[in-house]
Image (tube, rainbow, N blue to C red):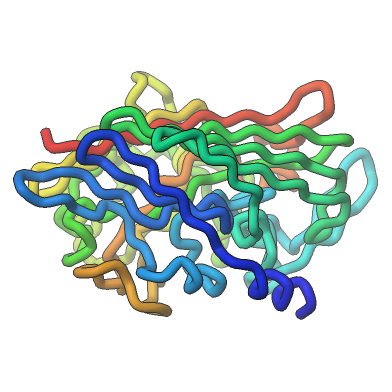
Amino acid sequence: MGARASLERDSVKRHRLSDGDVSVSILNLGCITQDWRVPLGEERIPVVLGYASPQDYLHNPNFLGPIAGRVANRIENASFAIDGERFDLVANEGDHCLHGGPLGIGKRLWEMSPDGDKAVQLNLRSEHGDQGFPGRVDFEVTISLAGNTLTYDMRAKVDRPTPINLAQHSYYNLMGGSEEITRHRLCLAAESITQTDSQNIANGQTQTVSGTRYDFTSSKELLTADPSALGYDHNFVLSHASPCTAKVTAPNGLSLRLETDQPCLQFYSASKLQSWHPPLSGQTHAPFYGLCLEPQGYPNAVNIPTFPTTIVTPDHPYRQLLKVSICAE
């Protein structure tokens, strides 16, 4: 309660990046991408879902726009061990830990250092024991805009071995958020997904996407791939066959291209999205009105020895580079 009260007493700050007709608003709260506008004809279209007021992000249960962590995705039973030492985390999704816990780094105020209208650097120190995680971590995120490309450069230095697995968590809607994303087309360079149990916890197994509704190796309209509206909240294992990991196209002619150096990507079709606060003008916040493309390491890897590790050490600091480009084709 004390931490939350302290957070609410501080002001949420916003910095606007711009290059030509493209603009992006970044918050110091969780490195949130609040608003991203791109030109289409005579209009400037908002391509990420956002709340109209920065202060409303203090209550952001759907994780609109932040850098999620320390460890994105779900950690089974909110616990893990390193070299035989057990660490118990703060659970925030049933018995499990989601996106770093109830006060993960996506819900914290960062130090913001603007670099003109093209870049902004954000820094956060997370102390040993924060949300139950071991080690002190110094996070640094630089967000820069060049033309129609937004780059997220995420780094972390630690003082002892600890898991780090960050994920940028914007909800994209290339139609401006005025209609469902079911008519968007998606292409993903991924030939398998990580299997999960009934609580969406990765179990250490993978399965091929061939012949399933998870096969986006060629571009597919989401309505065609998912006609029963079951939705997606699945982690895809990337093949990195080309620099473009994911491509999304919308009926209005806008397209998104995503490049990442991460081994996996969580695709979420916002089946549980709710309207918590007044949205940006013209947007609807409801199920299937956004899609998340979250590059990251393997989920629940701290509890699955066969998955590539997400443990970071003082000798091997963390870095993730993500580039997202949105423009009219």
